[in-house]
Length: 407
Image 1: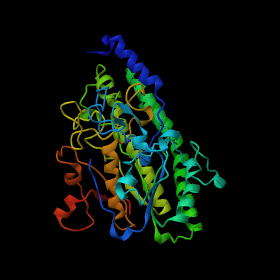
Image 2: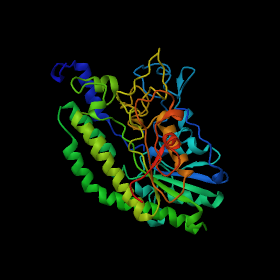
Image 3: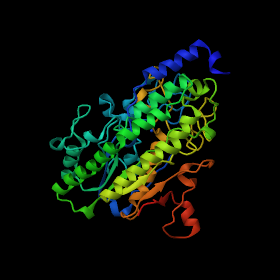
Image 4: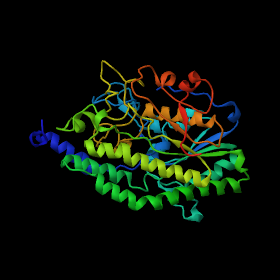
């Protein structure tokens, strides 16, 4: 079916998605990981945007079932009612959406994890108030919140995910959805917009790291007593050749929730996401902090990936077969718009596994955490990881981290 013959109802739904989308980077399995022994008495703090706050953690995969638990995917459903606070807690009322499966919590447990990140946050929401920081969603700047945490706890790790909202991630998504509706392309315009913003955004990411260090210095911490990990962003959509729905017609919109054309999908997956990761890696190197590259983390489990599928009433969600990112929603049926294109419950736990593993390694190296598609057993035991830092070939095959390209 070509787009000129699509039913009017489908066209209306596509237009609704394109025009209603106002998606902040709200920074996107049973991966239980024990806290490394050397950090047993230390706390881990998450700062930044929705990709570290846990946005999207409400959903265990995706389903086009609209009632009940959505084929077991909606963790906010219980006894006939939906309450997202079951997943996001008190943060749901303000919109920060810190889920119970957020990576810092899934990695270290509720007793040691402190989640200061907030869905939609920009770098200026990290800075201290007296250094240009801005309150956000009724909360103080995150660096000021960190000061209070560092005074009461012993902090051993700060993980930072920020910069995507400075680049206008929501505008990129909305632009590409609208282009799909009109059978045009978004990549040239959106690439130009990213290029015009990225230098300032990366400068502010660097300042965010400076602000964290200043807070820790003032609290009396030696630089060697804790580590800062700056992480990049995983791609929520696959390459065109890895999409299970054709670009013609409206199945990507109506069935999969991934209304992005082939050329734009390839650009996002193989150009935009690597560009962001590369620039963030440069900031990490310049500031002397660890870098965690996550651009391939969702490989084979992205929205509409041929390596995954929607959950159904007869085949419920699973970490091996489900999508690990939330599909695009209008907010009128399942969940909220800001959950779209974020790691979901399974994706959040995979992020947590990456974080726990980098925390267990020496602080002076950068790592890539990646997933290999086509592995059917649970991700907690059979992801095909590579670590070339030493050990036998069998040991390397069992490790989910590989050293980063930069020293």
